[in-house]
Length: 87
Image (tube, rainbow, N blue to C red; front, side, top):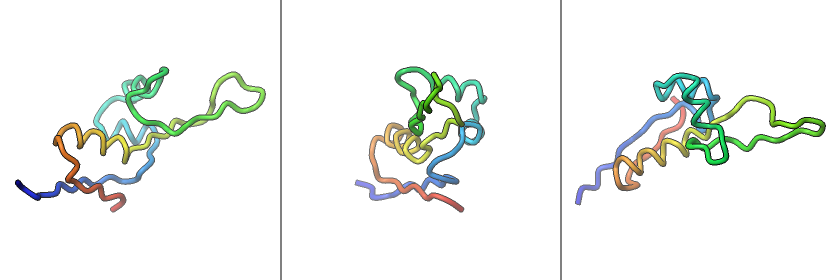
């Protein structure tokens, strides 16, 4: 068995929706679609409905480290990889 470890570098553990779209090479609109609905594909930070409002406001923030971990685990079929956060 090989004991090689893949190393993945990401800029931050939590990124904005615009940054997520740029990092993944998809359009902003596609990123919006992936984060909406009852069961979003991308893990996002919980949004709060403030008092007096009917919807949650503020920017959507994506848990990018968790997303990359899920993607790599699915692609490699194992969990022998490291995620390096920052430069």
